[in-house]
Length: 441
Image (cartoon, rainbow, N blue to C red; front, top):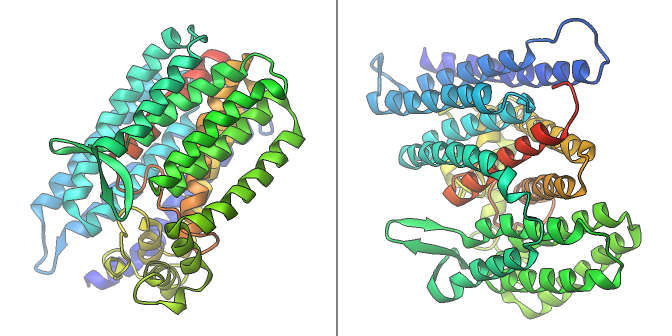
């Protein structure tokens, strides 16, 4: 009987995510004046979908064969539900003039992560809920303090110094995880300094580029970015290095409108990648595993092969929640959680997750484009670019489109530092939208 319920639930989960995205489309069409009439209750309907998805997922996870439910799982589900309802209350109280689609999309991705994470490791799932709670409070604090910080646009030098200090910390106090020197431990708490450095880097570039620059005047920022990328490559943070570099190119293009600089940067980055491939062994290993995982299927190619098997084994509808074998994928709870979701919720569900990310990025780009201030526009574009490139890198690596770079899927993967920073970025984006935009949200 339970197996039948799980199999039927696959269609229910697909309905939830399709209806969620459809309401997002309805909201955008109304906001752009394409549809007329009263403002649709699309955002409220999205919140109802999020709540029902969460409840359904945790009830399936909590069920036991003797027609009982696991109390610990139910309590964890209640923790998550309290966080969801609290986030909606925060949206009503603190983010009234912001875009609800961004907030709802982020919350739905968090809930999908909670459910899948509890399926894989209940303890880590509970920690993730706590990290998300902290992230929401930090986002409110950033939302409040942003007005003060944004007045000080002449702190570019301070921002870049803080960025380098954070990036250098792992060389002195860091520990290696899966070969990468990216983590700092303070007692029981571990964090990635590079995640916090993203904030200062974006604020530095926004302050630096908000004043018109000639090509020659851009040289200091290019040197600084090159040093940051080199530090991250040495630490084996290949994904973070690419994120910083591509974010720099996007922000420079927005500030200057110069295509030659953008494509010149792409060429320079490609040339630098070839040099890195020749110098660093870990870069060669990643590329070889991407090009031919079958050459070493039990070592270098194991992750990507298991990921592809997980995504493709159960087709568009998946095996059903709890019916797959996602733990066969190494590091599945962080780097490869999209593979686990696609295995049990289905490849179609995975495609719609990409649709949620696209909805978030579309509305975030809208904030950047319609901002009256170049400084605010650069900040919004920088945060959007960072989240977008991080999403592309991890999804591209999981499906073998590009070499694996070892970053987390924003809002979905396990990772306290990444989650908190990503939520704060959304909070600042919402603040920029509330202050700068004249649009009908």
